[in-house]
Length: 387
Image (cartoon, rainbow, N blue to C red):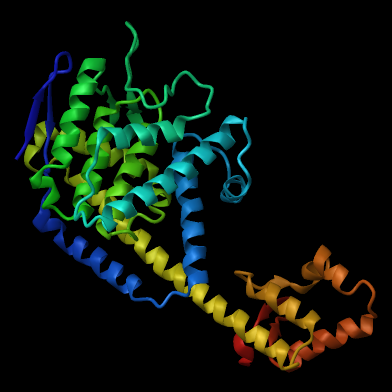
């Protein structure tokens, strides 16, 4: 059932599901299967914590880069792990804000689940809190933390561009934005929407929030956090872990799907939102597959480190050989031996030792099958010493 709102100055605004649920069911089934499969993995606490850390950094990098951020994932990790400064450069403040917002979403979603709520209840105060968190401490008049847009006379807010499906003019008047946000919250919490799988309800919340575009800046970040909140609280928590990376990698398709659904409201009203919902669902599927692959890699590496520790304790290798093997275990591809020997940590390792000792270590690793060396000098770890 569609909810039609007659605004004061922006015409009719329609909230509706408008998605072909039957056609999309196989994709939902695939995502649910992936979720169950990933949930069944016997993840060690260390691996679970590493995944949490990595997906937080990846998510913040994705959502910030979409909005013009320039920091790398490594730089973002450094900002997150450092003690926040009282006054920070804007690009660092944005990252600190996003980190706080993501933790707030996790906490709020957990509280919702712990209280036995089957569906996450979206409130205007929650949305305003998200905007305050991502905007706080930034000296930029565009943000106005926690306040809906109130365009001065002559200022027109526009979204998008011609290369991604056209320019969209969201509701302009403050009175209409306030009215629509109230209607949006009532609709997304309605019985009809709460009966839907959260995998459908979440992208619909994302889509209509962006259609209203209630803030002067920060709408994309808040919309993606809102989507994440609904999923986390419902139990579909893995679909949202790192989804922002998918949005960034498919940024053209992201904006195009939004505009296609917007335009089909007139040409194909029965299923106008299908394009956006389907695009997001494909992202959930990709995200869970990536998590599964990364978890397997981390478990493999954890077992490898345990095996290396055993080799050292049993004195099958010495501490220098252990450090070399430990370094090789973290490399995604073989590394040139000559380049390895020029690294500061390696040079310090053998600084006070003779060339003969160094040569013996390498000969021992090769003879035991712990490493392999190609004709062009590429060295790689031979996992578990299998020749």
